[in-house]
Image 1 (spheres, helix red, strand yellow):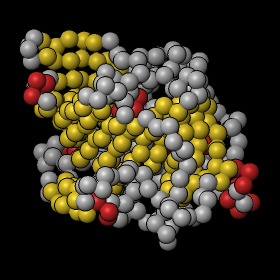
Image 2 (spheres, one colour; image 1 turned 90 degrees about the horizontal axis):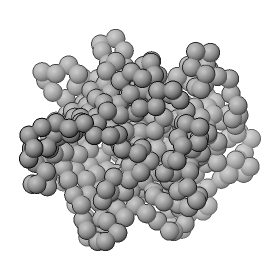
Image 3 (cartoon, one colour; image 1 turned 30 degrees about the horizontal axis):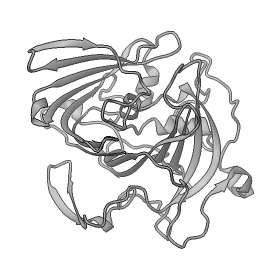
Length: 356
């Protein structure tokens, strides 16, 4: 099963809410079911995967292998160290840093989202939406992102998303409003969901989707789109790896058309598309990206009957951007793999890089 989605952001001159935040705007996003081995390197390259036991003493000194770190006195389920933390990082702290990078960016922005999914019956389900996304606590003095979510009291909204459907033609004019809430074990409502149907000319309130279940005719779930909260999982370090490739493009498509935030379309050779684009400063000399690999096991007391038993993230070692995400079902079998290509678009928001 394959899902492709292209995301672009553009600042509006008359709207101050378009002026802030975020680092990596997701340009390509593939999710597919697999039954093949999942750890790979460049063709002919030596083994790149290392477990924690195989790491050198110097490499182990760069990470914190504890799983029982001190808790915050006010919010007892998050780390005591203030976000965005300082090195060496625990696997849990890396997961919090990775929360900055869901499919829908954690900053106020406009987005054109084209997506497609091949169903098990061979039906291609496609769509195009225009999204307006507003972070509630964003202003001139403060950033949004994960800090804004953590500052929001449980049960209060922190993000609003409006989606306007332009394709396929039968969906033209349909609209969705998602209101996201900060959750904990008492305030468990994640979403208020409203939909406008042009044929009915009315707005209807819908029940929130089951967060870990896939949407109809899609491989994506609600959490795949809006992101997951790190405190709902138990985290541990698995090791390190080097990625040389994420999204694989068909050989029949030698040229790809890219849209810039200024609305300029450019054709570039597909072979020149890099995992973190040309501006990423931490490529190895052989073109690989060094990654930490962390595992998040679903906490049943936070997410009962969740669709995934665990998640495995390949996080680049400097920004903790998830280049690869594996999901495993309730029986521990690999269910989906998400691979990404990203580019830094909003330079005003600086995610602190980890020095090496």
